[in-house]
Amino acid sequence: MSTPNSRAIPSVLTIAGTDSSGGAGVLADIKTITALGCYGLAAVTALTAQNTTGVQGIHPCPPSFVRDQLVSVFDDIPINAIKTGMLHDKDIIEVIVQELTTRRRTLGGAFPYIVVDPVMVSTSDHTLLQEDAISALCADMLPLATLVTPNIPEAELILKQLTGNGAVEDIRSIPGMIAAAKKISATCSSVSVLVKGGHLTLKVSDILEAHQQGLFARDGLHWYHHCGLDEPEILRLTRTNSIIEQTDERVVVDALWTKGRVSLFVQPLVESKNTHGSDCTLAAAIACELAQGLTVQKAVETASNYTHQAIATAVPMGRGHGPLNHIHASLTRVLPSPTITRPAPFVSTLIRSAERLWKEYVQHEFVVQLGKGVLPKANFAHYIKQGYHYLKHYARAYGLLAAKSSTFSQIDSCARTISHVVRETGMNVAYCQTFGVTEKELLETPESAALTGYTTYIIEAGLRGDDLTLLVAVLPCLLGYGEVGLWLKRNALKPESGFYVQGNPYQK
Image (cartoon, rainbow, N blue to C red; front, side):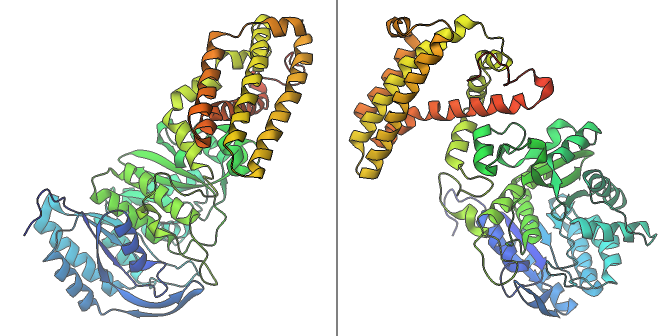
């Protein structure tokens, strides 16, 4: 009996081997498929005895039994997408190709998407595809695919097989990855190809150089959760604990060739041993997104973000390369868990939700002229006079916060902040005098309407709300001033920007 208003759940079939430790293969695929809201089915090609340290044994399934599994599934449940992983040998590949080809003729345009992860070697360097099976994989399996997802060593072996010259091409660079994706696609019925760069250590400067060479369009560059050149400085500093040149930051890059376009997917490098099954997970996640109607490009982007987060939130397990955290996406959270590459998800979400206003605030013409040393002195004098009055209200706000605090450590923190503000007002008076503003003039300057409006909002928040309400009220100032200072410093490092610190008339 059907349930009223029931929603069909996309079905995703994984054709792969098992992993007794649960980190890769069919088990990782099913976890991923379930976490991403699809229904998982499986046809097992081989049983493996393995753990986080390596593969201890492989027991391939009889090809006829692999066929039986496929027939059982196809005859009963509609499939929206297929992901293949470890196929082990030539005979198993042949029966899979025969069954998929037969089903494709029967279903026509309704045939499911196929994501082929050409698994050849395990993370621990154990051979998972027999040598004589590589030719069958390249000649028969790859042309059936919607998307092929080789890592760099796999792409090199595929190119060696497809070109037939016995030589291994060097594709260990962004231009090499892009060229490899195009070549594989051209010789395999124009399938989409994603070459994964996890085996490379690249920098942002490598991406910029590839863009200058015209290898991809600007809209073909996809950063993990805005961790790119436009990332807010306060978030970058929290993540990297450094104000190093952005171009020196280490990243992981995957290159996609689909429908005549190049797309690069960039994530910050995560120093982690918990990468067992990452290729399986990514391919399964892409299959899920395709099953739910996304384009290849968007499916890869979404799946890449999921996999990156699964690595970043993984808990160490075992003595070797540990598994990913596949269930992070299935946990009910308003915000994602903090990770090494995204340590402040709350602030990141706030800024991203008001991205245009944030940029207008940080890069305001006042700030730009200040950084270039061309701001009219009258404008700056008005700013520091209003800043003096703001500090008074800011100290009052922390007095209210102390009154709402429940521990001595919290009260002490508020008292220290007020003490710092009082000292800063003394510095402010001395600084004003260097611009011809006397202390008498400073005290007699009336508050502007903008200052009165903002500080009234802060004080009212402190009087009416709890401590969290008050902290949120002062947060824009705390974050905004920090971001402006870091943004000015960043631009001053660029000789062509016109920004400078040493010799700037407003340096203090």
